[in-house]
Each structure stands twice: as structure tokens, then as C-alpha cells.
Length: 102
Image (cartoon, rainbow, N blue to C red; front, top):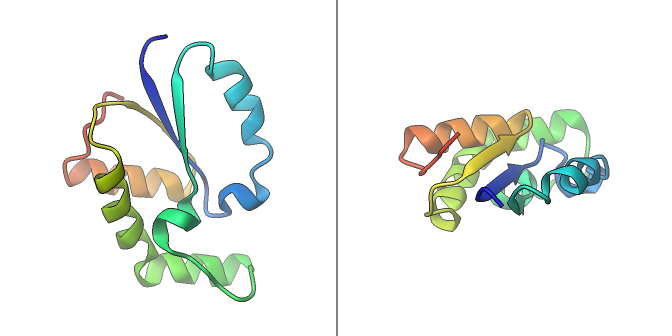
């Protein structure tokens, strides 16, 4: 293993993330993988899971909440693989000092 890989979902989180299993199947031979669901990090809980509602929840504070949570959870330098909203969260966390190798 070459180290830790932190994977951050897209805005749909694990709910529509079955495709992520194919990434894990391949990457787990090279990394110790930690997975974060964007919606859980951001405290997103909308009554109707539409793209518009989820996006609005992230824009209205969910991204900032997710960044703060990620900074608390990940304190050791790691590699990051993030998708869409997850990429925004990882990028903003890196700007605030997230210890990121790549």
C-alpha cells in the first residue's frame, strides 16, 4: 500500500453511489481507503431529494459545513479522489489547511 486515499462522493452521496464500488475494487489494492458521503459531511437532509434541492442545500451552507467536518475528520496527509461537489469541498478544505498529498 502506498498510503491513505480519501474518497469524497458527489452531491448524491452514497444514495446513488453504487458505481463507486468499481473504483474501490481496483484502488483498495494500492491504498487504505476512507470514504466520505458529501451529504453526511454537509448535514444535508432535504425532504425531497431533487437535484435542485440538494444543490441549494449545499450552496446555502452545506459546503461550508462539509469543509469544517472534513477538516476535523482528516488530520493526516493523504491522497484525495473527489467527485463534483466533493471536489469543491476538498479544494476549499485544502485552502484552509487540509493536509493533502495529491
